[in-house]
Image (cartoon, rainbow, N blue to C red; front, side, top):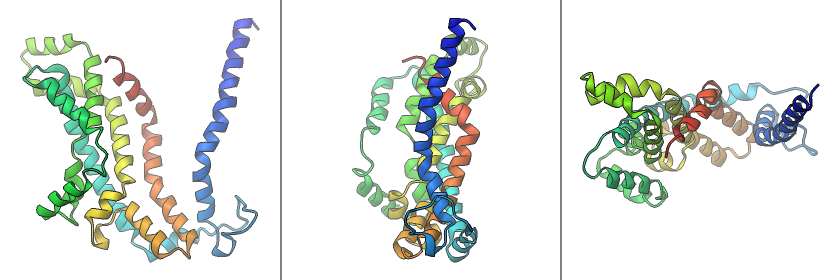
Length: 278
């Protein structure tokens, strides 16, 4: 074996030696949550703690689904997070295309406003946003949970960066062929942006699936609670049943994990492609 091949194998081995322990550190909380979710109340606080249970109590999942409205919470979260994600993908891609390819008065100033919106903490605008939604009578409605977040400064920035990385000759050639702006956006640029759209969609869906503060403020009835609010309610009302809380939390994170696994390849590729050109 040549020295070059030996160095290559040692490099790969070193990467695994470093990355495998780091991966275990990051995934260990989830593994521990799943382990706690199948414990009985009697051995939940056993010491020393044991990761594996001799007789897993899989009935905890049935019990938490029967006693609490987790299916309703999951449906609400799916509607809210899915709709916000779809709206953000549409608005961010259209705005990103406009900022990257079109010329209009005040373009740079408007784009700076989009960037400035990324620097404002959400808690600062929480009360004004609540007053607006309350005035419009959207409290405890899907529209009140969705409409305030249909636009995203970060997503617009990400899409603009990607569209700017594409050859401008594509845009010029399409214009010469007689295509209008929407046709260029829909038939040429948007299909090329699938990896970036997958990355942005994954981030948006996970963020709003796990969102707690705004759904907690904007909902009153149990029928409109999202899964994050529902799990928080389990912690407050059923602290004596921690094994059921862990079972509910495990159910809550499964959709986001499945989404990331499906879109993992596009997730990484999208960020790489969006950073090609400043």
